[in-house]
Length: 141
Image (tube, rainbow, N blue to C red):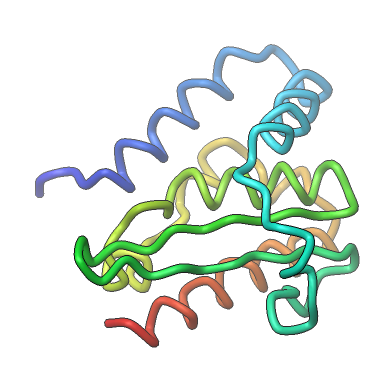
């Protein structure tokens, strides 16, 4: 089965996380990824864009480029690790067709041990982010 851009991006993340010797280094890298997230404009930090189910405040905006049939995502959070998690997911899904976003799997999160090293509340928030991004994608497919 041929790989997709989503698969390639996920593999890049797996390779990057494998470079770090321990979870303190990986958390630091996750925080740094959050610093590189395409930021949502302050005007969109509203309930409409907020991801419910996260303990921290996190907002993700989804835009659809009809001419190219791709979605773009921007986000932000008031918590550094959550912002890094949003950056991870955005990095994988950004500029992909809605159907690809809807059908994306996130096995790479288990491969890098992310879910295993997050609290249950953060795992719930991560699942909520993914679910809401997929739901938003379904509006355009």
